[in-house]
Length: 340
Image (cartoon, rainbow, N blue to C red; front, top):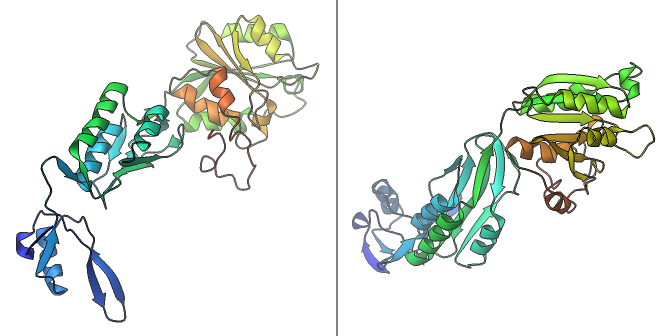
């Protein structure tokens, strides 16, 4: 470190904490080690009796924590993320849009095993609003060799960003509500209150809706009737348990759809079905979606909206964290549900 007059220290890095004491009110660091001294700071230094300070004398090829954090932030961030200015050696990532957070987990883990810097994020697939803070990064020490930052930049250039926010597509949806009790008017159809409002909140909308009885042929025909229409996604609700009158699975299969999986390690949502017919996804929603505030639907629908295809392998991982605690009030997504 080098001792210089405070007037000569503008733009240089403070090498030690500078303590301020206000009798009876405050005692603590007024300027912290690593602070880059500004012209407007000089009167404050003089007020607390600091006419000279020790500053860091950075060697060529060495970066201060603020500059390092900014370069890491730019390397790690993908689409629709804003990187903040450095603060105490750290930069924070903020979502620019409403969308779904995607994380490159292998790359994230490799970065954090480097022991030179850290990257902390929210869980992958966390729904974000514009302005949501989704993570932050910094180096561990006050300075770092520039080659360490260049290594991270090269990793991200080769393998893509570590985190990004994917925008929700606005889908046109066809809905098929099954059940004799609804078809014959014995009970009220709860689709609008439980599902349709969620679709609208994501910017999607129901363009076609049919109510059919528990009949394999009628369910199949309803699905096929949507095939040549401008519909991006088909929802089929009810009739997915093991009761003898529950025929939705058979109806979807008879329509010619490929069943990707039927049954998930998610509660509520164990009897959920995912299928594809002529490149259109079909979501079979069990009766739990009409009762519980948060279900399997809240975990998979946002992924469909960002264009992801669901797999049996991926859905099986959600068993870890797939048990909803049914909290009152519900705080999802600010909870562990579906964060496996």
